[in-house]
Length: 275
Ligand code: HPA
Image (tube, rainbow, N blue to C red; front, side, top):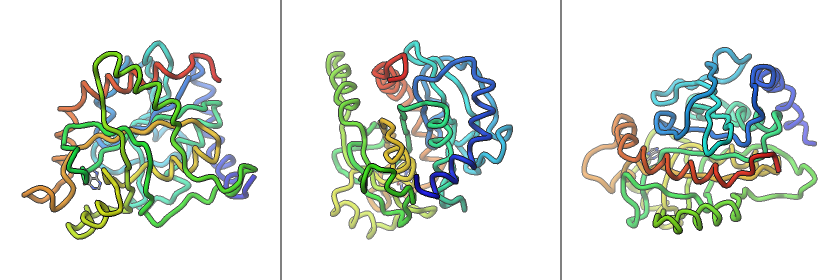
């Protein structure tokens, strides 16, 4: 095991211990919410704790990221929800950004759902749509130093099988969401129009400031991952007015129903017992 990962296990073990002690359920999967998304989740809340009650656990400082950990019943499964995430642009480092992933892993969870808010780069998208993430570009210029972990130099992976099963279920019910590439930038400033043109040329469909490090860490730990972007705005330069965070949050209300439906379907594809 890489010294970095060993250090993460030791650093986040006390948090996992508190959760293990208090949780009456073994969660089937974990879900991390992006900006404003914690208000648009399916399922009833069975249990909740503020992140502040977890020893050393990083606390979000950005509006729309409440900083709570919950268990929700979604599709008849207990799901461990990290409501709100921390970002590198808040001054946190990658170890802190991946804390929920490591805690989930230490709790025996092997299925991870990541959500984020993102700007549309592809002209086939538009604000109010969901994008199922098929692949990722890491433009944050940071990586999680997970080491080889006996699995070779693994590139970041999303679970294609999980994604296909979700798509099949959705199509059967007459729904269809686009799939595409998410590019992560460091932020906190939104992109310039020139950067947006560059990211479009590189083949990205949506841009945001999170998710890749969680995916890198989860891949190294052998977890199965599913990611979805809520398209909250056109990327800078593709809309007339300047972009702001309030607009990003406001758009989430409009997509809440679709997002709940998609996440319910995603969790329903996770085995009830760990597997
Ligand atoms: N750019 C970067 N991050 C974002 C955006 C965006 O346009 N929208 C929501 N998060």
